[in-house]
Image (cartoon, rainbow, N blue to C red; front, side, top):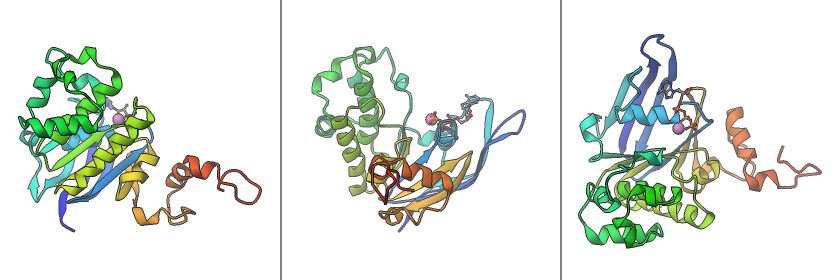
Length: 253
Ligand SMILES: Nc1ncnc2c1ncn2[C@@H]1O[C@H](COP(=O)(O)OP(=O)(O)OP(=O)(O)O)[C@@H](O)[C@H]1O
Ligand code: NI
């Protein structure tokens, strides 16, 4: 497989204290691959995305290499070769109608329609302002803009919260469809189940370090190939494992 994105020895730290929040992160994302980044709240998932896009908080800095097809990732690639679906729906411009915001990424009307429909959004969202959307609709618009773009690398920071079961399913299917193009996706998520559903590999971030990269194949019924205790805990917390009856216990211990 060909590497699309390579992150090598990335550290993110506070400028003043030099305290590291992300420590020596290395991760390769191949063409056509979906990689999920999972980890607890505050473990540094969003900062990783912010480092890639050169939008770290001004009090922070990074060291290390980030490459897209062997070229250093530059801020000028944002919204073009690489697109971030930010965690906060506040990222939508409150003063610009949705249609205009989408057209910043593409003018291909058919493509726009198809993707909006796949996300259960009707054309009339185009004439609305962000404040007229529900949280779930706003999140779907953010994802739609990324999918509508021609970016080869998409990072989606928590694309599923606030969606009902049907919308969540549609969202995951649509994210998965990126695979059929020559693109790659890094999906940042709390939702281990979503990661397991669509990702080819899952990188587990724990206290600022990637402690394990799990290939899809390791998700056998027993989760026996999982190494790190944190990954095992995430796996055990999945509903299907929590309720499976093994011997006399209810949890899969
Ligand atoms: N702008 C900022 N200024 C100072 N510290 C920050 C800033 N943004 C994040 N941090 C700190 O960096 C750490 C990692 O934050 P980050 O947002 O990357 O976590 P996360 O894994 O994305 O969490 P969540 O799942 O809640 O989104 C946290 O301890 C947070 O307090
Ligand atoms: Ni985050």
